[in-house]
Image (tube, rainbow, N blue to C red):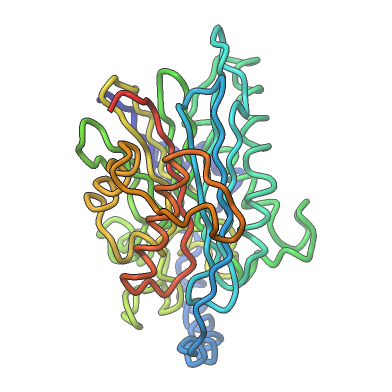
Length: 354
């Protein structure tokens, strides 16, 4: 499976983004003091993290078919063992037209918020619109470059968050943030842009293929970048940036910049006949199950070997496809395996010849 990779946090792309993001190397000294101040500010927050709460399930499930680049899809979002829902999902079949192709491109995204739901909801409402504008602009000027389009729309989304941004002051981008795992599917390619620790996985010929990389502070290159900017990675119930955030990239979290950046890592994959489906999910799923396990479960669902007989009675929803059924089963399995987070799952069926 051929693919093109672009990490917009790399040195080559930093020059293109200089008008949007400051170069961290110019402000290292100030950032060391800033990191200590942020650590003190979040002391109370850390002590309040471990609060017991009841399990609550508030699902959203959907499936559509038709003239699209995918065979079908389904998704579910559950609050799980958290008190509040901070995840958001966006699915838009044919969100932009494809040149010389009738079906266009399908848009799928999982946003996993932290510190509140406002940034995740803002991304749900705006990011796909910004991407559509970038696609249109790219085609008009010099031809579509998915890496440039994705990178630019993420940067614009981040700039819209917070005081003075077009999303409004009610969206607190200073201490609230969100991951973003975006998958755009066309007839010939799959475009993946990831910022944070949500994840996209492809099943091709029965083999689980990661389409994105979790941005964790303990990754060697992420740790090096954070420390070069004057920040620290502290082990506080797991490795965290300044002992606060468990992800090293996100949209929002402006008080954590430049240690936590909003620059996505982008991959463009050519589709093959053996590609079966893609699963996009928040870490509420991936923290408790492996890529291989997820692909085995979804594969069984799509082949009709695994059914939830009470599916139609659950929350008065009727599931119209195996893809939606697979998403619901994955959420149930994550809960059964002890997931303590919100759980959001999208299953994207690429073909029916399995």
